[in-house]
Every structure is written in C-alpha cells, then in structure tokens.
Image (cartoon, rainbow, N blue to C red; front, side):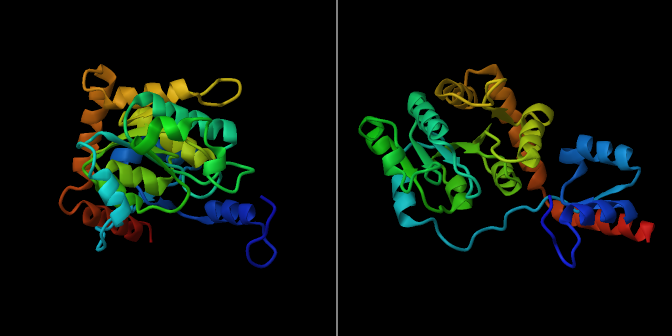
Length: 270
C-alpha cells in the first residue's frame, strides 16, 4: 500500500511501526472463537493479544420494510435462502450468473442482494437467459440495500450465503439461519471463512476451482443442500455447532465480561 495517511507516512508503515512499538495487540474478538489465531499472533509477535469481545449487533428499533416482510411471509419457516455480497466489489457476470443458477437449482425460494456485475448498469440486463421466467415469484434478485439484520431474523430465512465480511459473520452467528461461506475480497474474508468452516465448523464453504478460484452453480447448489438437508450428517454437525456458538454469544453478561477482562489485562500491562 503506497497511499499516504497523515503527514507523508504510508499507512502500511504506520501499521508496522505501531505494531513494533506497541506493548500489546488489541482487537475485537474472544478466545472461544478466535483462540487459534490469537495464539499464533502472540507467538509470532511475542506480545499479548487483548480481546475486547465481538461487536454484536444491537436489537433494531425499526421494522423490516413491508415489501420484504410480505414477500418472506409467503414461505414456510426456514425455507428461504438469503444471499448478500456487500457493496465493495461486484461479481463478474459469469460468476453472478453461476450464483443465481445455483440458487435456482436448490429449488428453495431465495432473495439475492447484489450489485450489478462488472460492466452492467442494472440487474435485469445481467440475468441468465430465461432465469426470471423460470424462478417467477420464488426468487428475487435485488440491486439495492436491504435491512440485512432484520432479513436474517425473519423466521422464513433458513440459509445465509455471505461474502464473509466481519459484520455479516457476526450477524449470521447470532441468528438461527444456516451459514454458507463464499469469501469475496482480501485475506480477512478468506480467514473468516476458514475459521467458520474449519475451526468452528459452523458453516459450509462453497467449493472453488483450485486453478481459477471460480465457483460453479453446482458448488453453490451442493453447499446450500448440505446445510438445509435435515438428513445430512455434515449439515447436522454444522447446525449443532452453530447453535452452541449462538447461545454462547448471546449468553447473559457475555459482552460485559469480555470488556472487563480486556480492561484488567490492559491495566496489568500499564
């Protein structure tokens, strides 16, 4: 990173110098979830890691927009797949279409919130041929912002396909919907996906080609089916683990205890 932050010092150098001069490394998280990674950082940098607890979403004081509520209300509990990719980087058209075709293959109703793919001004012109007619009212592809936290809380939503941003991961963990992982951006998204799928085993990552790094409609279909199938052994394990993590994160005084521990350890260093 060569762009500057402040008085002529590149931001990479600020991070490096700050890390070298610091007595400890602090970030939001908790040992129960981030333990393997904090252990690595402590061993690598020879400095303690202070964790202030994950940033859990606050209960919303507004209602879900009526158009989404009325659409979701039409489907039985736990049957809808919600897919969102944030607003940072749009998909290429080929991957955009593979994603939608994979959702179509599942047979589940779905709501996909995504920016138009690269080179397109609207969702409509980028849809696969005949897609809209085939899915009809069962599937919605929306190019604008949606109230993600409220969508995830709706009882009809049973699966969340996420790009693995930290906020989306936390929102997924504190809800009952099952988690499918499709990391999109840099190393943090990839690390979040690995932690969720390999360490915590609370979600299934969509398979990608080893050489091209691309996913297919079949791999989207496979991942969704695993977490949504009550008869799948892997799906049952993922659902059980997710339930345990959710209950832990929402346990009484959890956030307070994390902050208290952070402050005590910080005082010990000072």
